[in-house]
Image (cartoon, rainbow, N blue to C red; front, side, top):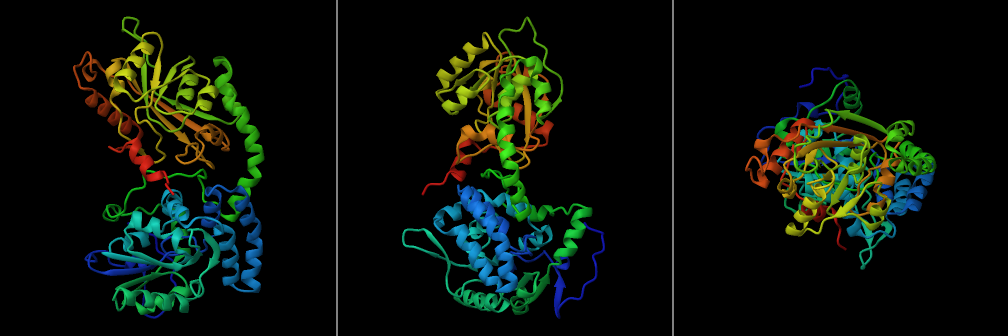
Length: 507
């Protein structure tokens, strides 16, 4: 609960502060909320246009959009907001398939939307049984996310012209650009008339253009964006648990940009990229150097490594070599582990490109997904060398652990769990839709890529399949729980199949 007193500000007649909005007993009520500046703190959608342009696969489009930003400011002041918005929409959406935009809304933009949300507005909104949104942004870039994660019924927003083949022209349908308060109110009244609702029970807004539709609602709640941002700088606003239960957690998302590309940030990314490419090429060569100079050279090139726990002692009397079972954050997990240990390990993988195999500094062995064959392969390797396996079978960016495949537990009792945590500032070093062989390159393009390795104690005999007579599923679940407990991650039953069903787009 917040105790900081907010700056007093005169409210429009009959308007109340959203922090005083009731959240109990709203299950049968209808809420109408503005997106821009109310649910999210961004009042202008340029950063999301830039993210969409970049992630749709066109650097040229993203560069054109950034170059057009100063022109859009001139248009806003000299002509109109409508003219500026129409220009940015045309550059962003022309030639894109509408279905692609809708997919990216859920799979890519979702992370940025969540990061940009005002928790007070979100807490009030999700307490209502039925939720509707209004925005000046194109509807197709916000509605899929809002429906998927917040359970929003529908979104009233700017409508784009879409050809019969599904491609956007980049033009806006006549009269659908919802920038003015009058136009918002007209569009909302028409929409609610079609669903036979006289007026919403509550309206949430933050700007002058929201006042008309807020006055139409029974309860009017205003968001003081400046006051919220001032409080946010001094203390963290935590979403109540009751509100968290009503929101679908973000487990999987895709895209290369790890930041919201505001105009300043987008410019910084473009200026950094030439140097980042050179730096990435040098960093990628580090694992190919002798182990004696590998870690100092990594530090010299700006790669940050942190090691927790102690290296496991090898028991000479124990049969076979060590099997390292790690959480999976990027394709570089086994390579980083090998560098930290200062010796070669063999990585067994479920899926890796041929090019990644050729570029790898350590030996990689591809598994066939045939249980008997894979078990035999791993036992053969463990008879002569240390092996590292990522039982999740795929990476996860958020603080969750996917289900551990139990195969690793069957082939060895000498299991050492290792927590791997990768931090990326500008670019994500993982992808579901893009070129996976580029993952290490993007990871190394960050200003200071960081890895933390946490070595846990080797599994005690009573927790293994052979000496402890446990089932492989019990051992796999135990390793997952131990890694989750040590790292503060949440174990799940989600699998690689769940991830790719959500993140792989089929036209």
